[in-house]
Image (cartoon, rainbow, N blue to C red; front, side, top):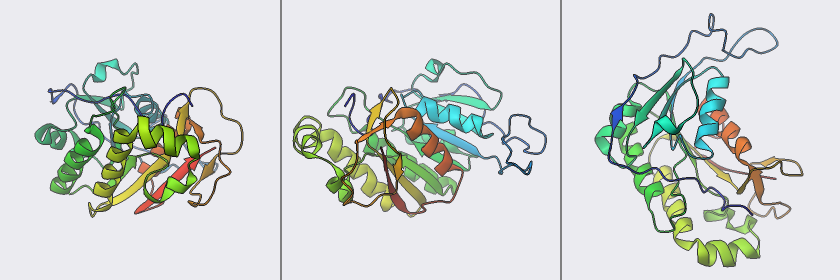
Length: 254
């Protein structure tokens, strides 16, 4: 596996200044970028903020949301690293553990995606600490829809893993990372929000053979335990703009 399930680059820093205003949700009737179904109608566009927007999955989630017609705010320590230009994209420079900055950033949005990661660090608690900060800001602002990227293997999905991931990776090398993911999930579950947790397997940069499975049970062991980053991003975008899997943890893998 090229990387651990659910791992993405770090989001840490001290700045929390917006480089652009919160984007306005586009008019689905007139915006030529809004996707339409076979009948010519379009889903209601939303204003969605992505935390961890410059990570390997976060940046793809931003692009997927824009492709679906939504207005997106990319929150990251260095959002200028997001090589993407779009009229419905705003950037917000900040630290996911800074309460004041996070609250300013997410005000006025309809949904929140958390795709936080710690890069090569095995001791960072940015996933749990940042997620708790985001949850508290959402509660203060009256926002309810939260989609959080975690990892396959967390809690009851431990049974989906093989010996290598149970004993070597999450059992030893990445044990602190894994524990932080489980703490992150516990915080989300206790938040009282309209949450969905997405549990991807190990990220791959090349196409993964076999069918993509979603929402499979913990006793399913017929898995490659790999998934493309773009597939994870597409799932995050789809969940943030829907009410599917409300207050559910959803496993996804080839």
